Image 1 (tube, rainbow, N blue to C red):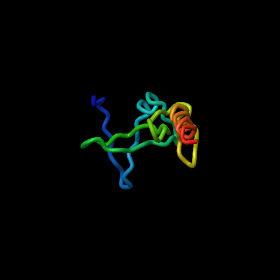
Image 2: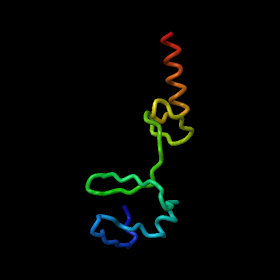
Image 3: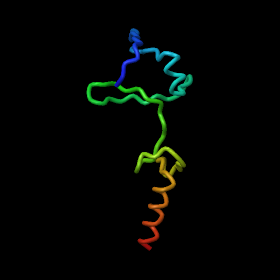
Length: 85
């Protein structure tokens, strides 16, 4: 991971400000959801993108029983159901 030389301090509530240059570069706007996770000893902040629960694809999603499924996985599931009948 390449450092870009911006240092920010965490405030007393545990918050950190993401610089406007980075928000603009990654298309992050006010109120956008941000995903926070750990990779080894690194904390990663990433703009949240909903994705398919089976393959991780983030395009052409459909909600089914509260879960997101892409069109390809939905087709595979549909074919499985037809084979069972």
